[in-house]
Length: 175
Ligand SMILES: [Fe+2]
Image 1 (tube, rainbow, N blue to C red):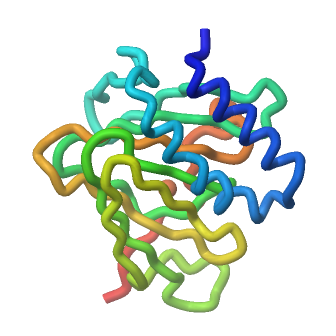
Image 2: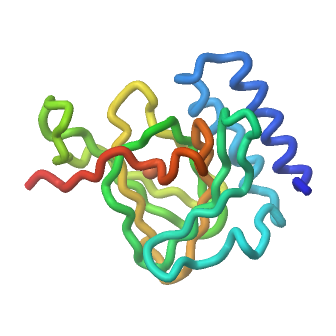
Image 3: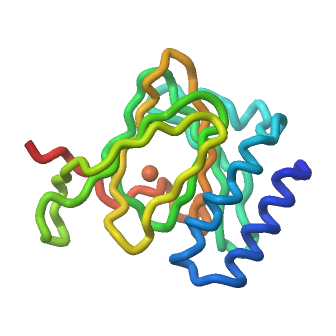
């Protein structure tokens, strides 16, 4: 059964998606996500499981109409994600701990370029949320700079089980 916090949040996302275009949804969802990040019993033990390698992703809620998915990501101490862009829009926030996020742009104008140049750095503390710009290159890397496991909550467009990992291209840094 859904907790009240999650239930309310899903209803709010439904309202957002009914009333504004998809490309405006991530910014609006990032505004309401801190309300979900403040729910103390949001995650069940299975959502907190550490993977044997890499970072973990666990479905918290999949919209039955495939409009959006809510996932918990589990970041072991010190881990970096690949530098990646996304198949669908994304809003995310930190539930426990601190994450660093580096944003990038493609190094060349070519569509198939897999080199990227760093453009921005963000520190996300527990309770803070952000989103990736849906109309621009949405390339980033997430890093757990701490010696503790960190948990973030991600809201993606579409059904995360059907889409698989929300990665389109893996980039390397232009040197
Ligand atoms: Fe990502």
